[in-house]
Length: 386
Ligand SMILES: Cc1cc2nc3c(=O)[nH]c(=O)nc-3n(C[C@H](O)[C@H](O)[C@H](O)COP(=O)(O)O)c2cc1C
Ligand SMILES: *[C@@H]1O[C@H](CO)[C@@H](O)[C@H](O)[C@H]1NC(C)=O
Ligand SMILES: *[C@@H]1O[C@H](CO)[C@@H](O)[C@H](O)[C@H]1NC(C)=O
Ligand SMILES: *[C@@H]1O[C@H](CO)[C@@H](O)[C@H](O)[C@H]1NC(C)=O
Ligand SMILES: *[C@@H]1O[C@H](CO)[C@@H](O)[C@H](O)[C@H]1NC(C)=O
Ligand SMILES: *[C@@H]1O[C@H](CO)[C@@H](O)[C@H](O)[C@H]1NC(C)=O
Ligand SMILES: *[C@@H]1O[C@H](CO)[C@@H](O)[C@H](O)[C@H]1NC(C)=O
Image 1 (cartoon, protein in one colour):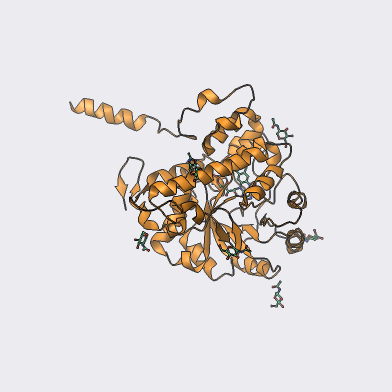
Image 2: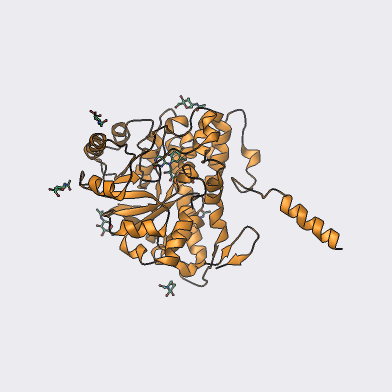
């Protein structure tokens, strides 16, 4: 008897834990193979775009998008963290007007949804028109798009895709080096291009170790060690009149520091798990702030990203007080189809968000708070802890 129990436990302990890059929703028969893309009308979730892009893109190009740092624990954890916190749906609430509560203001600019297209380099790896589809679909839906400083096209060319009248607001991600003259000229370029805010990435003072992509020569750009300090940030703030958002906050301590730093918002992110393996997902950082310093969500606008694939992921972040939620890989995979693909991705997430809100018993998305989350935390063994 004891031996049998021992064998059962030993087997369970040795079995590899199942990781689902995309949950099994029966997508496999819809992958055409032979380098084809699944027709857009057969794509029903953001996760489907990953499978379709994987079949279509060269392994080299796909590896650049898919890559995480080192053993990719953070990459996997970003997707799995949402699965450890359950929802607490309320019943018999009038939700028929929930769609009207979707539009939101980000740094004072109005957008149609509380999610945005996060900065990701090299759109040309998935589409010969590079960043065009991301900008055009973002504009058509009035969803915020933040071009990467490492985009395939120069930022001036990307904003030139805007329709005449130039009413669509975009922000610009920025990487800096150690030379203030270069920083100053980057800031001028961004201002002259009409970008309305700067998203300064601070999670990459070193290079990410990205073996999956390095095999194909498309790993982290070798930029050496970058001087990123609070002191330098305050100097940079003084070099531009544009608002600056700090991208890559991963602790409550740094969130506290940022409140009085002059930053216009903070962006919780581990860079899609591409920089420091074992850094927490944006959702976990939001949970940490919620637990230890919830007032921060009222003191400064908080954005977050990492592993967001479903409407419920967006809702879990909003419930903690996050104002805007970023997604990178899903839109990069969708951009293999160009504007139509990105538009479909936006539409899928939008309608999921509306219907999920309804089923959560939310009449107004903006009224969501942490009472809609069960803040017990489920660990890998299925135990709930506080
Ligand atoms: C292919 C790729 C390129 C990226 N390039 C940048 C970049 O140039 N600047 C930056 O701040 N973040 C970059 N990121 C990180 C994203 O902005 C974002 O933080 C992260 O990918 C969100 O996780 P998700 O891909 O699971 O949605 C990149 C991510 C990917 C997947
Ligand atoms: C943004 O939306 C708010 C209300 O939702 C509205 O009062 C305001 O005028 C809008 N601003 C712009 C610039 O359209
Ligand atoms: C891979 O990316 C390169 C660089 O942008 C591009 O020239 C090439 O066409 C891409 N290959 C595929 C199969 O998409
Ligand atoms: C900084 O960059 C400028 C312009 O690119 C260059 O002229 C200057 O020599 C650089 N300074 C240092 C210390 O490298
Ligand atoms: C930078 O600081 C100086 C002096 O403190 C000030 O005169 C100047 O206007 C500031 N520049 C910007 C762009 O904020
Ligand atoms: C979800 O909500 C939208 C907006 O009300 C609606 O058009 C759509 O048909 C609903 N269902 C699905 C599966 O998206
Ligand atoms: C959270 O939302 C619920 C439902 O609207 C409300 O009853 C409750 O008072 C809110 N809690 C807080 C702390 O605001």
